[in-house]
Amino acid sequence: MSTSVLVVDDQPLIRHSLRLIVDGADGLSVVGEAGTGAEAVAQARASRPDVVLMDIRMPGGDGIDATRRIVDDPALTATRVLVLSMFELDEYVHAALRAGAAGFLLKDAEPADLVDAVRRTHAGESLFAPSILTRLVEHYLGRSVPRATEPPALLTEREAEVLTLVGRGLSNQEITQTLVISMGTVKTHIGNLLAKLHARDRAQLVIAAYERRLVTPSHPSPPG
Image (cartoon, rainbow, N blue to C red; front, side):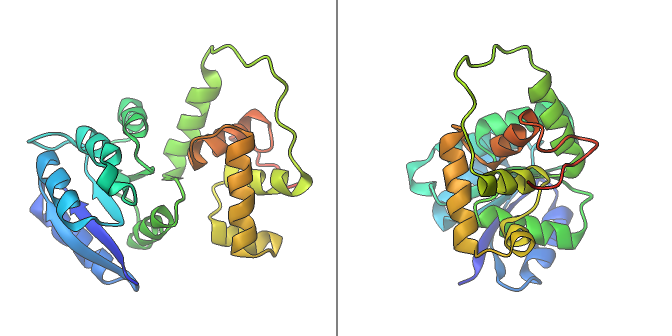
């Protein structure tokens, strides 16, 4: 079954370009377009897309508010929002995450990276441009927030390996190839990690990998 995509941007030329990229990829199809935040919410409710490619700065309600309304709509629980922006300002990234976006990608991304991002977002993965991911991790690790007094959750050797690869930004498919395990096994480990680490999503697993020093911004550590 084709992955349905709603394209949201206030510039018709960009919407047209995104449509061409998405419709030209195997297994993806655009089911609607919107030029404002209000239109995005209405179109999402009408077409119930799998993924929304969401611009941030638009008239008629911005992309952050539209993202929040889509994510909070009980009828759209299967819809995931991937924010696209020309700007990598920290306040935009953090606001998008607080609104419930599954990822944040810059508009200068290569078409192949955009297609991959849509597929990974639909598969339930969180995805961020590399420069944004590094800054996001540094932001959370740099906060002066009191740590929990309870000891860190114990992970199995395999769970630590999977968490390391998640921290490096690998997709589930790439993890299956690296560890030579099935997709079902990878998803089971991801689910166990989310539960053990009390993480809301994959982005928080990435942060957990850095907190445990399984990877670092400048020197990734090998699994195990």
